[in-house]
Amino acid sequence: MQTSGGDTIAGDLGSRGSFEAINQAKMPSALTLRDQLAAGEISSREVTEHYLRQSEKLSTLGAFVHLSEHALADAARADQNFMRGQIGKLHGLPTAFKDLNEIAGMPTSYGTAAMKHVTALRDHPMVSQLRAEGMIFTGKTQVPEFGLSSYSENLVAAPSRNPLNPTASSGGSSGGQAAAIAAGMIPFGPGSDGGGSVRIPAAACGLVGLKPALGRIPADVHDGYYDSLGAPKFTVSGPLARDAKDAALLLDAMVGGDRYLGLLSDASVDSLRGLRIGYSTHSPFESTYEISLSSAARQAFQTGLRILESRHHLSEAKLRYAQDYPETFLTIWTNGLQHLKLTDEQALGTLAKGFRRRAQLRSESTALTAAARIKQIAADFITQWSAYDVVATPAMAETPPPIGHYTQHDADTDYRLQCQYTPYTSMVNVAGCAAITVPVSHSADGMPMSIQLISPRGNEGELLILAHQLLSGA
Image 1 (cartoon, one colour):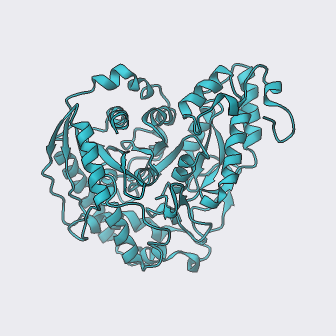
Image 2 (cartoon, rainbow, N blue to C red):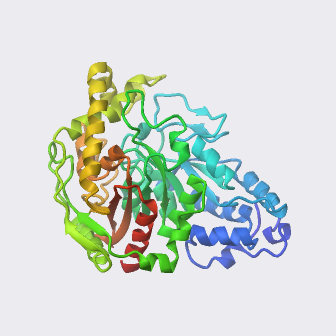
Image 3 (spheres, rainbow, N blue to C red):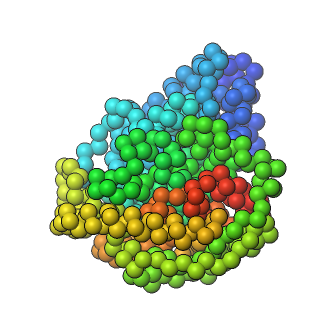
């Protein structure tokens, strides 16, 4: 293989082999690439060039909204650092970031046409953390407007499409990330999850998606654990990957430690037995919306439970959720829209425009009451779930919807449809605990279907081991 300038990679870096030759598998794992890069068997520039080429080749999927002009130069510097013996935990591995996170030298759109797209002067804290670990950033991926939605469609760029069925959504808000990973444009990637935004696209694209507990990743709480109203923050960063080991590898880098990957040795995975797992299909949205499972979602849930019961103790969880959850959550979720500094309010999409107006009409007293109430609801979630080591729910209620499924409606209908597709995810963000979605089966038309596992004690390591067990038994 040659670089775009005509110099051979092997010539630049001695005896390193060809990326294409060494990796015969269509999509090598991130862990495999990490090991090959660390051993000097392949170069960062070679790997980065491969993934950039894949991203250009598959551009019609809409996963990327911006490809970096500096990625190859950054990779070449990483190779020079390798020669000096200066490498990070994820030396030379390419990834991307959602277009909600600032990367110095790249524009940030936040998925909206209502704001000027300014080139960032500094990195977002999560970007800084992974840059320090040696990662190379190939670009920015598609998101919904302001990260509000469970689909990655906006008025800025083409929608992010599901690589397994390009007529279907790749989910949101980390939809571009999930599409890029599933299609082989990046080996794995960080997402952010404020109501399911890692787990939803992971489930849509057949990936492992982990939402850590609030505070597990230091970059998430650099400005505190609560919002301006005093409500607990909903949004945390988390990994999307094709398997549990890759997710653990990225989580270690995001946290800044060496804990999670080591938990996934064969002996550790096999020794985790006898957990008390409560399962339930109840949703806190069912007091307001009709929540029903498609046959594919029900089959995936049953398949996941069947795999788990070979090692663990399962029982039905008798869960009852607060009747006022839907309205309370929506108030907290949308309240920040009223404070946005926009250059063209008319350029907002239907969902953001509708909920921004509602937030602007909301009294401060109503917002503060919701913030206090959400803490009580969160405490009740944790109390009920803590009767078990893990709580299992369906991941999504149905298969990924088609592109345009939501955007043809008014704001309220759009939101209802989202809640009916994702009725089990936002409650985990409210509670501040950890959860993971894991693919366990396929629908009749071949789309991946997942199960969700919730750890009320925020034990991400346990969830990763369970994910490995599920994938081994699926």
